Image (tube, rainbow, N blue to C red; front, side):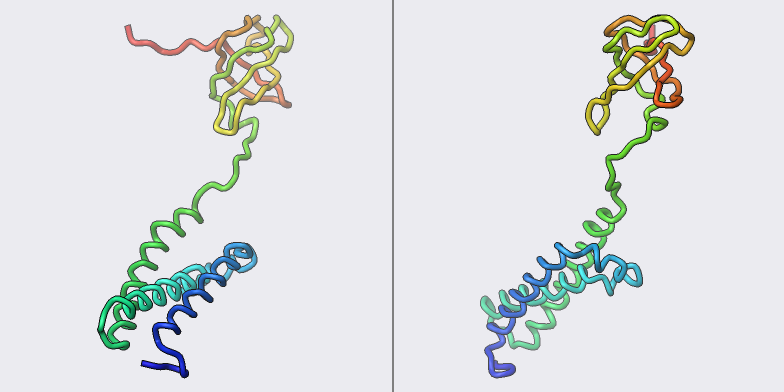
Length: 177
């Protein structure tokens, strides 16, 4: 069957190639078009491009591998594309949009964590601790919570933070007896 003077199978291949190129360009400039998807999930360019790509790829393969008529192939391809688009949207795009994109932290968010003394903390003085986080190791200035001295290598609990200084107590993990 021919459409616009081109074999349908070849037309599906052209649409697939064009949709693939547009999808690649969209990935590179998606931040500019991000607001469009907020109106409706069906107007999201990623969903529309995926639908066109899935439809054309499925129709191309069905034209190649089956002897069904072109109308049936287009209907089957559209149904397959709707199912794949649904899965893509709810299992890939929605979780990606709601994922945390920042590795930033605040000093207040570190309170309650356990660190290790790398520069001994003297009485009424400052030392240094290291805190292991998902962002990497963070070295911070520390003082004893009750102005006590804490030796090198001891584990400490970060009680509070004030002006970039963490007030810490020696950490005593809870153990069942």
